Image: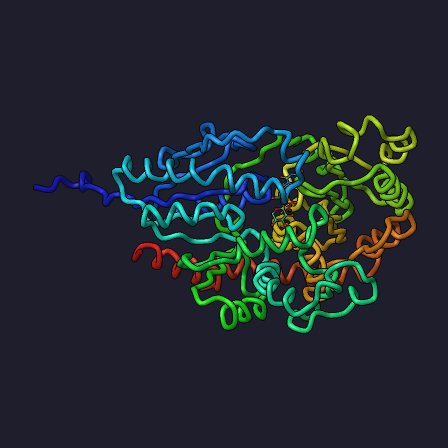
Length: 458
Ligand code: UDX
């Protein structure tokens, strides 16, 4: 007998997700987790102790959070740098993740559908394989950066080490397969040698057993890189289902957001403020900060500036800045340690974003129709900056040494000149395209539906 309203719901199948422990990776992975939860899956997130993101009561009981008992000291990230840290993390977690996954398989009443791991947590692949679970790669970067990484080996073998390294003239040349990228825009890291980067890319691009790749992008942003990857590089399905922050929101901030800046923004005029933030990893030397501060002061524009604790080498925060710094910023500026960035970008007072061009910041800015000043720091940010300036034409890239005159000109071009207004219009149009792509019938929406169907059949 069936009692109305008491039908047994079909058990949710479970997806296991493994984030890389950095803000720019945790946020999109948790947005993906929330998206899959809304599509009817239960979620297990396997985290490292390092940069553990505390879920507290922010997620329902269909979310399970498990910690891998690795023993990496907090100081390792700073001491080793991100790339050597990444190697160590992958080595440390290999065995413990296999044990953890084995236990999850035994414990789960509802069947595990697949393991989705951040591409930099490549240790997860072997464990999934041993537990006979399909594994899926999640890339938190643009598809163009992903495609660059996937051909790195070939480029390297074909003797392009020189342009990828130092020779100035060659670095300005365009990479034939990747117009309009120059060799100097390639996603190499300032934290490691080219050889170490090669090793990371060989590990992350080794997709022998992955059944598909999810990328946090939309085809309207990068259609040629997507076709390149789908047709020439990967033999497995690629699902561009982003921008995920527009599909599902998930509270994932590792640092406390200072919301007082929203009250300050409320007092400013429409499109009058430039927001400055360099994400969660990039650093800025004292002299660079001083040049930016002087350039901003000379531009006469209002600004909201995130200076993250630890982002100035040798200082806790801004205590080592020369006295003139406060004088320059007090008049028109507001400084916080960490902001509610998505809320800031959606605020009508914000008319421009000075950014290191991390992929999340790039998507969040385009998603709100805010044009950018691009000052990439490392890795994939250089690819994003080039696309912002030359492909989408909604960014001004500031290259070379920072100098107050250069800063002043860039800020005025973006915030005051007709050129900036044109960029704002193009950014608005891209925002509309992104919104359409995640709505029913849009390309990312369709891709997500295909992906969900795919994992239901695994
Ligand atoms: C890094 C890489 O730069 C990025 O390209 C890669 O895809 C992920 O790892 P990160 O340098 O931290 O990330 O930059 P970004 O991708 O922009 O991510 C930063 C995140 O922190 C964004 O989601 C942003 O909204 C958030 N943030 C930043 C805040 O919430 N408040 C702040 O004050 C600053």
